Each structure stands twice: as C-alpha cells, then as structure tokens.
Length: 555
Image 1 (cartoon, rainbow, N blue to C red):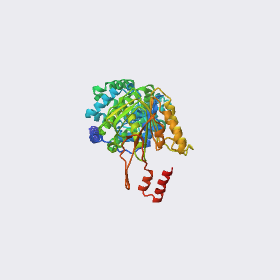
Image 2: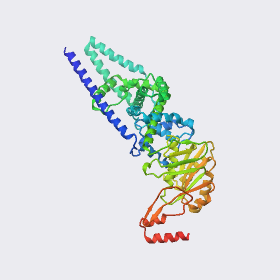
Image 3: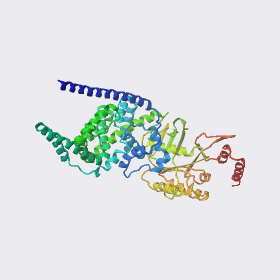
Image 4: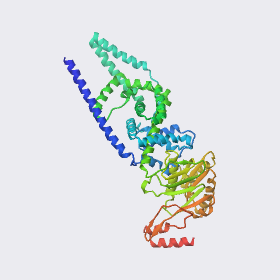
C-alpha cells in the first residue's frame, strides 16, 4: 500500500512539473507573438556583429559555385551587412543564412530567381498573419545553431572515427546480467552493478569528449526535423512546392526520430525542466544513449546530406519570404522590379534603403556611363550606393525602394571605400589600382551585363596622372554591355568623357555662415565648389581662407 502511495505522489509531482512547464511555455509564446506583431513593420536596431555575420556565411560558402557573387569590396561599399542587421526579421539559422546567401548571389535571370513563385509566397506572408506568425514561432523554436553554421560542423563530421555499437549493446547486457544476479545472490549482483556503473561513467566521459563538439549540430538537425513536421501541418496551398520538397527530404531521413532530441540536447535554462535534465544526464552516463544515437545519426546524415540541405534551404526560402514581406511593410513605398533585356537603368523616386524617411528621392534614366560631379558632402557617394544597393535588392529580394525600376540583370562591382593595408605593405594607391583592375577584367566578360561604380578614380596619386589615367580607365570600362557610374571632383573629366558618359551633378546652397545640401540630382556638370567655403564656415583662420581663394584663382 505504501509503495502505491509513493508511486502516486511521484506521478503527481511529475504531472505538476509538466503542467507548469506547459503553462510557462504558452506564456512565452504569447509574449513572442506580441513581439512579432510589433516588429513586423519596423526596422530592427541590432549592432553589427562580426561573429553573427561569420555564422551567417555557412550556407553561402557551401553553395557558392562558379557563378557570380558579390565580392567583399562591393559588399562593404554598399553596407549590405548593415542592411541585414536592420531588416533581417529571421529567428533561425536557415532564415539568417539564406538571406545572406541570396544577397551575396543576386540572380541573373527571371528563371533563376523564380520570381513568380516568390511573389506568391510573399503575398501569403503579407496577407495571412496567422500562418506567418505560426511559421515564425516554429522557426524561433528551431533557433540558431550557435557560433558556427551547421554546414561548418558537418564539414568536419567525416573526421570523427567510427564507433562499434556492439560494445554499447554488450554494456547494456552486463547491466541486465547484474540485475538477474541480484535476484539469486543480491550482494555480488549489487557489487557488479556498482562496478559497471563506475566503468560506464568513466568510459562515457572519455567517449563523449571526442564527439561533444558535434552534439550541437546533431541536436540542430533533430530540431530541423521537428520544425519540418510542424511546418507540414500548417502550410497553405500556395506552398505546394515547399511541401513536396520537405516531404521527400524527410522520407530520406525517416530513420532519424525527432524524439531523439531528448537524449542529445544539453541542459535548459528553465529551472522546471532542469530537474528532468539532471535525471536524463545520469541515464546518459549509465547507458551511453546519446553516444549510441549520435553514431547512428552520423551514418544516416553522411548518406543523406542532400536531404538535410533541402530542408535547410526550403525553410530558409520561406523565412526569406517573411523578410521580404516585412521589408515592404516598413518602406513608405516600393516597386517590384521590371527587368529589361537591354543594358539600361531607369528608376523613379528612388531612395537609399538604409535612409528610409531621411533619404531624398531621385530619378534617373541612363543607357551609357554616368559621371557625377559636385562639391564635398553633396551626395555623390550616397547616390552611387543607392543605385548599387537597390540593384542588388532587385535581383535578390525582388523589391526596390523606388516608385519604378526597370533595368537589366547585372553583375555588380564597385571600388569606393578602400583603405591602405599595413599588413600587406600596400599603399592606398596600390589597393585602389588592384580594385579597379578587377572591374576592368569583368568589363571584358560579355556573357552578361555589368553594373560598376567608381568613387574618385585614382584619388591616391597626383592630379595630372589621375586625370589622364582616370579618363582612359573610365572609357575602357564603359563598353556596350556595361553601365559605369562614377563620381569625381575632377571637373576636367566632365569635359573629357562625353559622349561615352552623361554628366550629372549635385550642388549646395551657401548663406553667410551656413551651408545646406538639397541632395537633388541635376543634369550637366557642377560649376560650383565649396571646399574653401567649408573652411570658412568651420572657423578656419581668415588668412588661410583668403589666401586659399586667391591661389585658386591663380591656378
């Protein structure tokens, strides 16, 4: 009778713990849904993190074939990392990594982008809030894989030595033998049990140390499978393509149960579940269950790595659709791009994506090189970045911060925010000519259109040679299949480069001791300068300002 009472009490305690855990989980989910509602149409305020970006690169590094991708110089020039930190509403590694991959590898054709289906899925995410939030909850439960990408862990999986599962099974048989022996001769059986427990604990610690770095990745794969099951239950008809891909991939991994996550996962930060985790850790040490499951999964994953990749990709694409829907909800206005088979760039009322309400809208329609002149801080470099980043977003997120966008599919390169390098013993000029040379080489590739940006060509050398060499470089770049946007302070280039280049400029408004910039693009080249006026406004000695002005007139 007493035994039954004890069992009943234990059962009641376990039930209470489970109920408390469920209630706590439900409360967290409700709070999270409120957060999703608040954040969907708002930019985020994350500080740039090199560690986070490194983790995002995994999918890109493992799917980067010989095709076009945005190189590091262009990526940094356009501030794409800042764009991701501001507009990435993903809560999982597939969402993070696929968005990074897509921005790093803008498509070069309608077929490659599959834009019709993309628009269909984005529309669902925009209109069906219930599904969108349910999906985001699933992805948040999946979460991120940690400091490193899942692909980084899987790369090193082949280095793990093979295990002999028969040894684990024999270990279990010794436990059974010890229990049987206790029925016939209790004390020897108890001694055998204690001895074997000690042996297994020591062996467990030794064995697990070798494979523990891979546990996170395997736990993450199990969470992927669990997220897949959850998604398959809620996918609407518009996601039939995704449903089919997830089902086929899941069938290849049917030997891996998502329930195994209980044995592979680490402890929880929740005090309620930590009690269960503590008991589970003892069971693991005695029976090596997590190690046994790990090696079974290792073999199946190595044989079906394509299925894991399909699930990761499919969930990542769906999360990308959420990001696109959110980005569009944030923008005051946007347009889906129209793509031309010609080498043109036409846009109306375009604004820099990172400036939102602070940006000034500009329009331009060009089919040849564009040279921007203008005074310091007038907006030339920002305009170049606006044109380039929106082109990148058109060919990746199918969304442009403009009222109209019509352009060709471009390979995109820039040479703008360069630095010298002490480590490479490289001057600014050397860094610059290397950067520009890579664009010249790309201009010789006629397989697709090229969109390139150069800010102050050859600024690292003397005036005469800069103008002479710069003019020839710009002419060489501007081929029939290339659109080159360049900014310069050298007004001489505005006279030398037409008819290969069209002239546009930005100007300023100076009143007494104040200067303002309208940031409005105008046709023709700049006729005003403000460098010396800025010295005066900033309080430089009158002698410097006066003599500098006189010298300008003499020159």
